[in-house]
Image 1 (cartoon, rainbow, N blue to C red):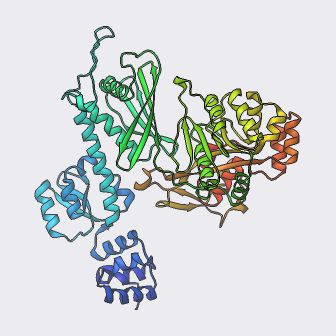
Image 2 (cartoon, rainbow, N blue to C red):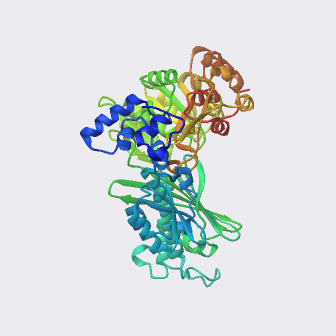
Image 3 (cartoon, rainbow, N blue to C red):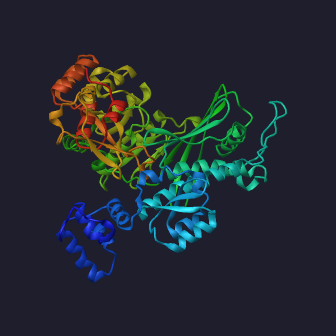
Length: 576
């Protein structure tokens, strides 16, 4: 095919345009044309399915051929919601058209097929404006419609839920208590029921772990924690606060008349295939009561050791140690760092018909087949220590203790590990070496800590780059210096980040992975513990033994393109 400087896309075939712009080769075009003769599918669809081009490449070529302007997915998400609403959702999805902006006489729209005259004529009659057409890809249009129309419906539901809001008013003395449970909700109360349901549905849909309802001076902020970071989802007016609090207190079986003291409760959300345990904490603030709800999906545990994020060398060490017949393995980190997930994955790895595994937890976060799980209830005296004393008579081989909080629990755990049992537990500490000193602080004697411990692991969760909008870039020397990374360690001098797209709520991150710091209790480390050495001495000896710190583990994931420099700086401290 002859390529000349006078190449005009409007007089060229689609394949020729793609070849001219070097999106495909002549050979790839011929392969696709041969497939088209057999399948009768559109050439563009064949090229995409074979991986020769992506949807954006096809949109640019198609728009050039027809003489229209093309629009990328990022620009679709900047569409004015009031303009989007001018086109009913059913019509938009039927004709694959999305409103973008409008002027006095024109309506700018994105369409999959800019020559759909029926759709354009219908748009004129519907809006009274002349359509100005841009070309967009079908999957990008669908994603934009899902998000924008979803947001419009959500805000409409909030407005509808708050219409005529007149619940729980009055002073402390003449306050009216209203039952807001769904079966007893009156027409005035039903809006609050819908609003609470809407908040919980949005949190579950977005994989949130926590919901924060925070009163401010003039409004309420509702935020959800996605992949460890809070994001605002709505801002209801302050008038809805009392109704929201009362509804959640009733669901949690709390005292709706008490507004001066903190309260803790729980309730469960059940559906045919899911069961989510909701832990509720209510705290009085200067503007009213703040609510935090922690969501625990108890039904599905699909992690295993390989999917936690271990580097190969760490994976081999951890797998070898958890296969030992006795001793103690302690995982540390702050709340929400994935400690329980790691221990559950270890249980899943070692469970078999030949061993009896028992756990004592508060709460039971996941339900695992083949493991005996006990839920602690402090209110009735079923504490960690009381439960552990009973479990000793249950002939256990492996024991998981949700958390070592006090000397009594620690003492029982140590005795278990020294009498032929394998014990797993967690401790709140900042890193692996401080975990050992934390056990000593709780009250365990140094010779017992040195004797029973097999392995100590500290961990954090870091967000992973969204695979749908991942891009490479050349980092500056300042950025590399900030995290202590040498340019020579980078592949082709590049690092990676996410641009932000519909899949990741424009954050550039989707999902999380673990970074780990493992101390294997060698003879030298045990000797330091026996001698009551300080945390720094243990840490230095561990690094001499080859330990990767949390920062090192994070840097390995940055270089591998799994996460970003910013995320590691947010999650770890500099090694001094």
